[in-house]
Length: 230
Image (cartoon, rainbow, N blue to C red):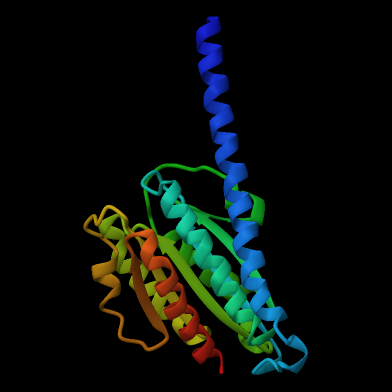
């Protein structure tokens, strides 16, 4: 490897590091702004679900088709949803999952910075979250479980039936499942048409195609979360 190749690799590494740092800064900024809502005369606010805990399971697609914009939008939605739930419950436990063809639970740092690529099998994350719900026996505790899945919808078509089957197994155990599709290039989604067949009121889906829609979408999703938690 010659000196020019080393310089090029170093430049790529620095650019990637800068992106990660900026993403963490954006996360903290959004988090602080939303936390201000909680601090407004918080002494007079009684959570509607006083004495109860919310568990938020967030599955994020990190396959090769999920770019920086898609991940940033998913991150901002996650922070908004967490904050909305914290207004209704004494405490909120957030558990984070990455998936491509397989699913793995990650910590907050990995969720923000870890880059993964490959294909997409969405059933992997739904299966993983279903197992965690059963293993932790949330149903028999004073806990409400919320599930969020963020993807660009580019799923393996043959996997969609399995996704539907697992979602239908999860629904009786949780307060709500929300699928958020981040699709700025308006590609034809392979996953969303199948999810539209779910008629259960606990399941909802929405699509984000540009940054201008973010505030409106966050407002709609958080309002629904708040109303469901009452």
